[in-house]
Image (cartoon, rainbow, N blue to C red):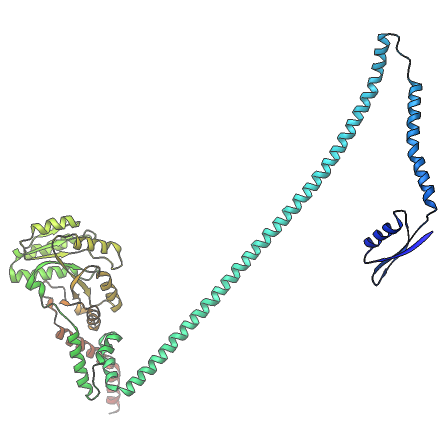
Length: 468
């Protein structure tokens, strides 16, 4: 017997080496793990090989012998030839059931084998499909959870960014407020006269840029009263007027503006003033307001009182034809529809009326003095789409300050034509004068600032009277 020891990194490699060196008939005596891998002790008996080969040859020869024997037996068992046709047919008929049974048995075995194979394949396929479905479902679930997590993280980060932005904005506003306060204190310390003028102009109702611009021209070597008088003179010089051009020149005049500012009443006042100077036959009124209920009837009532014709038009073509018919009149006043300054239809309608007309139309913007400064500024910016010849301020009897309308006129370089201060026709209208407007604004500032201390002064008077 031949014995050999094999050492390899794993069992597969060791068995391969045993097969290569000793052959497939080797016998494994022992195996164990060692430091380098595994150790196998195998052996083989060379003397047993010839006996095994002889047995294999003898075993392989037996089927052949059996076959010969079977053949010989078959030959010996072969029946005698049939002596007639009927005997031959009977012999064949007797053999057919056995052959049919063998064929049917073979078919049944083949069918069972095919069915078993198909069953195995179907089970394997179903298992594969189920595993794929489970894996795809798990992957889709994981993807949706990941997407939901990412969305939550994105929303959380956006909230954090918004909070940080708001905090930075508040810090910026606080710093600006503190810096502006420090700058104002520094200005009041270095240039007290200029600081006083700016403070009074702000109380007048002007904006900071306009107030600072006027205060820049104040010298430091004058008294406070002289500086304020100089500032009012500069403010008067910045304000421009039209010097009663509608009453003097006439022409085709259109009053435009937002709703509720008094355009129709102002048209009636201007028509009455012009009729008093030049006659009612020289005035004509036109309304383009087809939105407000009773707009034409209101203007027609004023026309009957004044004694002038009142017409209504719907588009630019009718307006052009009507202006051609009324061209002998010295003054034609057009009352337009009142809408919000943010309404797109207003700009389209006004642009079509002004630009498509063959006659030159002078447009005047009507603003209420009681409106906020930002509202008036926005209105001017929207109505600047058409050329403006000037502006008319209404409801001066209802306002507490005139600085806002002065500021709007200066900032937009818009001449002031007329001022109205009541509902009476035609008394409550006057030609705009810069000096008068500034004086009225200063009067309102003084009265409002004095009323601010009225409660304190009355309380002091009562206390002094009590302890006297």
